[in-house]
Each structure stands twice: as structure tokens, then as C-alpha cells.
Image 1 (cartoon, rainbow, N blue to C red):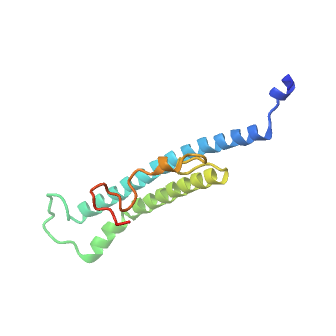
Image 2 (cartoon, rainbow, N blue to C red; image 1 turned 180 degrees about the horizontal axis):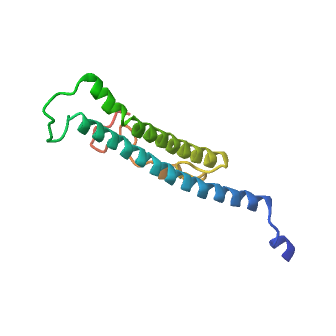
Image 3 (cartoon, rainbow, N blue to C red; image 1 turned 90 degrees about the vertical axis):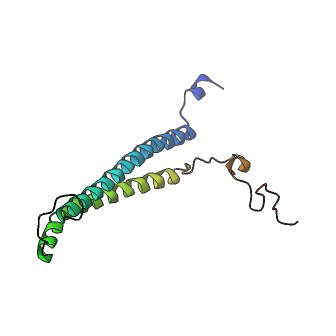
Length: 140
């Protein structure tokens, strides 16, 4: 084997590097997607809080008179944009997470962390059915 063979990039090297780059990008996409899902959840909570406070359902303030139906609809409609933007953030977050999983799976990576060649026994965390260890096993 000559020095030129050692310094040459092979197709397997390129495949391995591509897989590593896709895995890194997928990890970032998963993190950003998770962050967007958290932001969306906070947006929905903020929307619910504002609407319920505005309708005087929660809190210790009372305006003295009940709101008419059209006033209630106007109040809820004023905060719908917050709910819509939260839904958009959730959709983008889910899309990023799904795209990350698809890209890893298409390049031959593992979505579960299990790699080919691992012993199957290392994946079992609990005893098999019927072997709870309490002497109540099924008869053989």
C-alpha cells in the first residue's frame, strides 16, 4: 500500500462524512423544532389566559355587569391572531422534527439510537411477559 492510497478519499469516506453532516443538521433541526413547539405551547397558554381574563372568568376583578354575547365574541376575536401564530409555530416545529427524522433515516442513520450489530439482549429493559419474578409464572 503506497502513501497515495492512504491520502486518497474513498467513496466510503464521503458517505460517512455526509452521514455525519446530515446527523448534525438533523440534531439542530430537532432542537429548533422542539423550541418552536415550546413557544407555540406558551402562545396557546397566553391566548387562553388573555381570553379568560378578558371574559372575567378568572381573576378577582369584576366589572359589575355581564358582557353581552357580541361583546364576548369581539373580545375573543381580538386575540385569535395569537392563537393562529402559535399554531403556525407548532406546524413549523413539527415539520422540522419530521424532516430531521426523515433525513437521518434516508441516509441510513438510526432514529432510536440502536445500531446494527448490537446484541438484542441490551435492548430489553424489563423481563419478558410471564416472568415477573414473583413466582406467578405461566406453567410450561
